Length: 94
Image (cartoon, rainbow, N blue to C red):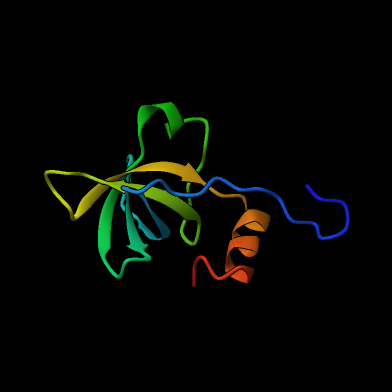
């Protein structure tokens, strides 16, 4: 983090990934995500994150849409609240 600005270098989505906001938790390892490309997708929380990272409604995530089924994808990353606020200030998400 830089001294004066309070800005951190955050993980950004790769070419095949998008920012999203969790709108609904559907139980188990499935969530509904409103993606920044204008699509609504069903997100799957992978086993490596399932019990380590709790994902709730309103959380900002990185989602990787599936090649074979674009209306679904895998959650790759969840941002902490202060990191999500920084992304909003910088205009990356709404």
